[in-house]
Length: 235
Image 1: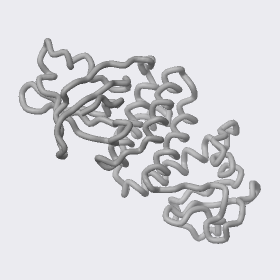
Image 2: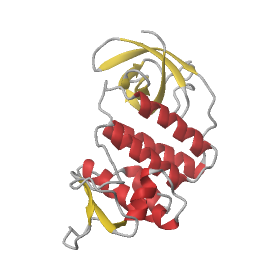
Image 3: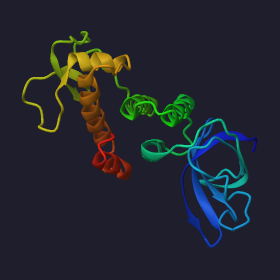
């Protein structure tokens, strides 16, 4: 297997001395690898298989669980610290939940790398996370268009109020929607389409909308890291 750029999303013990690592790779998507002997004190892999660091990986096998044969640290990213570190774990949990194994998403891989870079340099976490969530939904088959009403194809008006039907898309708010559907201004939707989060209202409403959409597509299964970030008012 030729070397492949990748990131460790999650790892857990396997037998006495090994790990199973869940990795996101550029050309093969999310795959599971056995890192034999990685738990041994003097293993060369022990200090390499860290989250949020670009790695060069190689493996053998074609089944659901392959065998890691090589892992090298590539470098080029600052380590995540503090709130940025929690945000990084949130990204990883989203990728594990939304990305099927062996389903490559080159654009999502590149955006993940860019997002880690932004977080490491202290850029506003809420804005960075909203942009990532949108790319994640689009690249995993949940296309999200915010600037047009799905049924009429008419352009969203900034002064009107809308809801986002989780299956059909944007439509005007009528007042008979389920109570948990957030009502969003047209201006917020237009801003989100352009990844413009300069308005305070857009920041707040986009948070509610993306939380609603992610929860729907996850079938209501809670995200552990989201709750931590919510408790800290960072998401």
